Length: 443
Image (cartoon, rainbow, N blue to C red; front, side, top):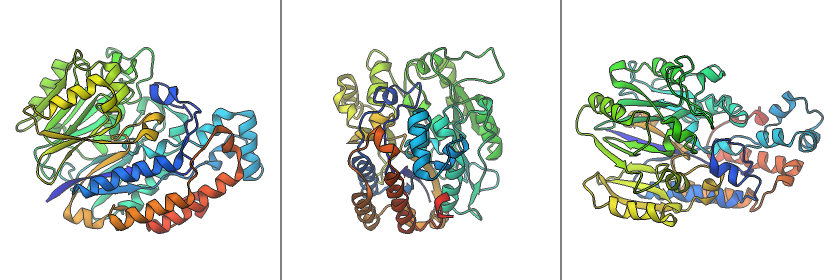
């Protein structure tokens, strides 16, 4: 039996609103507002625990160590750690903010994952995203690779690849631009890669206002590395006009689960043709749930993150949407979701969660999770301390209460004591999650 596990990123103790993500409207709108790291982490943990209680397999990915003083030293800041932070705060605050980025919490960008049912060698494949389009994210992938190997040990079941070369022509944003459709998790599925632009084919359109972060060439390279069957792999272009309206990743405008796709009327370039290709490649019944523009505008979809929701299959076999509470607050979205559960689709319920600290920083429920399809043997090979259960929820919640601040401002980021607090917390976390010496400061 195979199942899909969601591995959520645990929000780090220096969670802050840096406003670093050009093209992400929520991120930019809340730039340098005061954040609440404790509330952010507890909101994320509450969602993880609730999904565990629903009978789903829920995993946890640890945060990256911030501030990244090694990154700041590479940029010429020197002295002890306190002096490095003070210099960066005074002379290049934008670089200090990049070194303090909280963005690794969004595990949908951590990597692209292909299950063993789809890979020629019968292993689960992982490729960390290089995230070259944003400086603050481009520094993540080496640590992401170490983290994934600590959670999914290389060997009989798991195959780890390095990130693609760090060049804009191979821009890769991970699972946020990747969906797998299947009848059953354990059967070979259709791997659907959604890209924003081609680096070499100038006949394909590109956005004009905001950057297209995922290239066709990056998606093709990952498909080759993961040993995917070309007959069961499809590359579809995102609508460039929507990227210019703040749809910076495909998972902001479309989401899939098993034999269901939930997407906006304007999600894809030449949408009718794209949907015809998807249906032609998919074996079996496929539920296409297209949300009309006159029911939910693109602006409302982005504001509420209607499509940055999780669609999960419950133990009963019914599907549920895991949505942020913002979907209740946006009238057109609330109305649409209220009607959706009565339509002839596998989606039978909508469950709302408060993840406002993440939403204000630019990521909804789907941004927080990395989806990993596992067989029973593969699940048994996962680091057990990285799987959610009642005891781990209690322990991690107590850890957050002990170590996290409930208010953080830009001026706080130059304080050397914050760095010490963060490293102390993460050192304890690696023991709770049995991760060994995961971070550079531990080695």
